[in-house]
Image 1 (tube, one colour):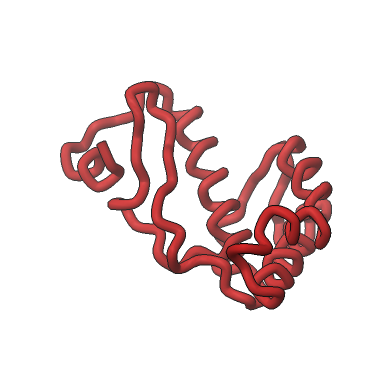
Image 2: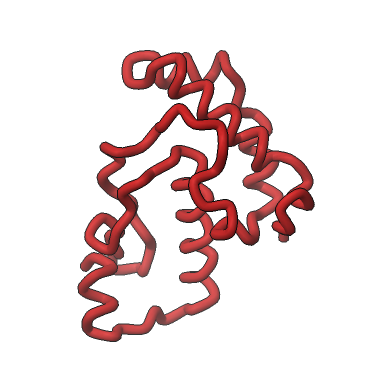
Length: 126
């Protein structure tokens, strides 16, 4: 099922806290890759209520700011640790066939905004 069907049928997730955690990860990811086309039709939900994100065709803009900083309200320590390991070399190694230099620079600039203590924008690590 996709998020549109879930929403329309008013189906509640069995674990609201886990659902909210996944939703926050999606918000972070979409801000990092600057996905301007996230909608209910490209958020799939599997039988275990895990979110599967599809359609990133309008992502990876070269801009240096987050798309929606207010949506990034919390993130895990493991996220901070992982994103701290993202650098120009390993990003280029994994995306050279797909992203331009400007697109990679945009990701790294947005990574720098997100990888701090989280205090700049009032976000908190949990």
